[in-house]
Amino acid sequence: MHATPLLERLIQAFRCLPGVGPKTAQRMAFFLLQREREKGKHLAEILNHAMVNIRHCLQCRTFSETELCKLCASPNRDPSLLCIIENPTDLIAVEQMGTYRGRYFVLLGHLSPLDGIGPEDIGIKELNILINANPIKEIILATNPTVEGEATAHYLSEFIKPYNIKVTRIAHGVPLGGELEYIDSGTIARSFAGRETVD
Image (cartoon, rainbow, N blue to C red; front, side):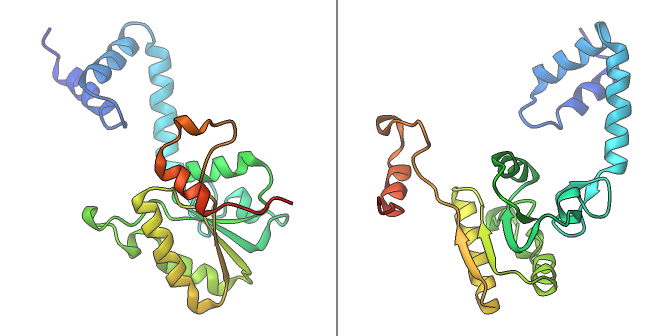
């Protein structure tokens, strides 16, 4: 079947989503057109509304519909504790833990010279302003345990050194419930390097 120009544009529009190839995009477009036109209209309405009204928090840079997100505006968060993460999805993961009560700074990515992503692209200027404007005692580097995440954490630790602020890195290792025979050697090595004394 030859797609009409508008149908082809719809299929191509779905391809902007991560992991959506030509066949999946075609299946999505056909599904909405054949069976769920009302839901398709609702999706388009919500998508348009979200693209216009969701922006970045002026302080932590996560997604927000207001100038400051709920976490940054909350008087119950500890302003002396700052957790630096790569993406808003990481913020959600840390919040689901339910024990962290500090503030956040979202890099919106990680350093990747091969992709042309340098310090200015991950908000170093904004981080500098945030550090200077708040009484921060500890910064937790919670970037992902990837090559880029580790390079970003190293860069940030060097950047923060002149401020004389305690810098910590989240631990990486064997997950709770994991079995050693199924864990890769790099993760096991990191677990051994970060081992703790048993009381």
